[in-house]
Length: 196
Image 1 (cartoon, rainbow, N blue to C red):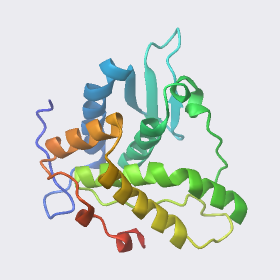
Image 2: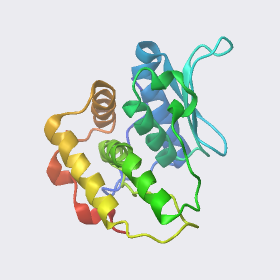
Image 3: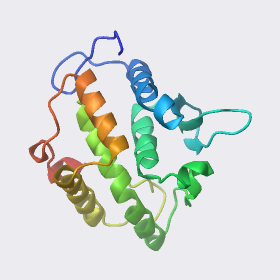
Image 4: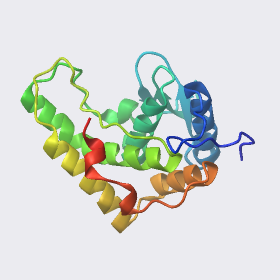
């Protein structure tokens, strides 16, 4: 358990620096999952990536970009969804089309991002941090994101109603304990919070 005093945001308390928040998250994630799933959270460089264990490196690694807290939570959400076979593949064996997608490619991207971004929203709320949905296509064709936002919101409600799988549940509970926040409930989430 960390001896760092939790700082709540955005409820008016002093704001923890991004680097401190990332270090707290690394500690909490590794406390939960290094021994149980042989997986560690690691601060990385320009691009996030998941790397399975190798003969040269004994742990699976969820590597997040630039020391951004939001990148860490997003990469963790993908790890929480990936099954045991996918966790043996680099980047879980997923495809990724970079920024600059067509409308059709963006629709495909949004379909596979609903569950990860719903988990990411839950993780953010468990930390007391606001969530910003990401369509990740700044230089691509302009698309209407209303349906994507509706799906992410509905998925959050579904997770809360049906219960989370073991890994995301463990993390949400641990984050809530660390940041001294109440258990997550549907009334803490509003669809209009996804509009920016």
